[in-house]
Image 1: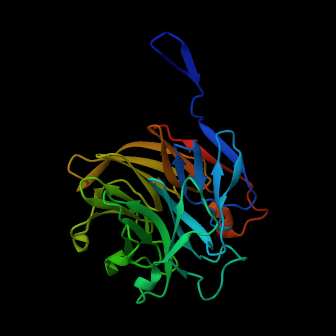
Image 2 (image 1 turned 135 degrees about the horizontal axis):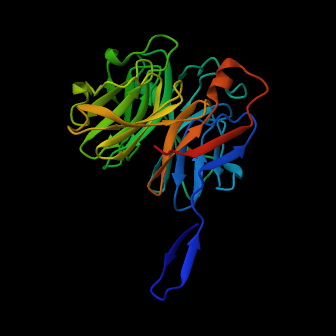
Image 3 (image 1 turned 90 degrees about the vertical axis):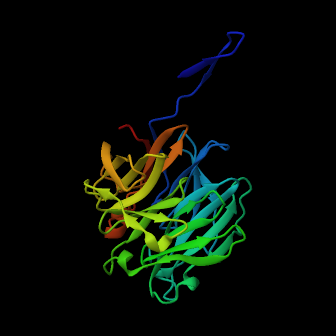
Length: 313
């Protein structure tokens, strides 16, 4: 327990944040996680069902929102009272996939975080990038002006969505193409110095993308092997956390030159349960164990238990 004392010396105790939150929902396969501090809950997505769920500290899972347009829900981002959700169709949800959308969908769903509705605003991102046949909206970052940036794992594209919900292609560059069948651009975070940091899963690269000159992106020099890089979390202006799903690691990188280069300053070894991404809660990072390897391999029976785990370097 953590305790604090008021001016009149009355002790007030509050429960410590748990080290592990285990929740049960058969066949969910959550991919994204965010901590909703005002409502004291984690929000999680579902690659296999498209649902958005909420998880309490005691492991209680309940539905936050669902809609047939949400084929597979991937990354999440909370921006004020808005919940932004990346929506794709990798073919993992038999009830909602179709030949017209499978491996061709990159959408962004927008909810009110506090008053969810089963009818979100859904923006079609892939329509802005018709020259690429395949699409997979993966992760989301938001800058200081409220512009959202969404990575596409099946096309070398980052989309930009303005606060008035205008969709454009922010960056499209063949250097960011992944080999066929592999995930390319993945995790993304906004740095307050005016650039994005973006992970590319197939080669483990981290790219620095200036907001005022996206075509001038550079690769961050890192000696650490970051193959299968997935979610990113900016701990502070000089510290970046990177999840590697295949390596079952969370790497902590630090920079002294504005992410021209970065060095390893810590490693957290996860359970071998396909960790995907991170959420920040009261200054502490939590990583989601998604078990997506079981889904991708067709392993049966479907996984029922998942967990959100404190990261201790």
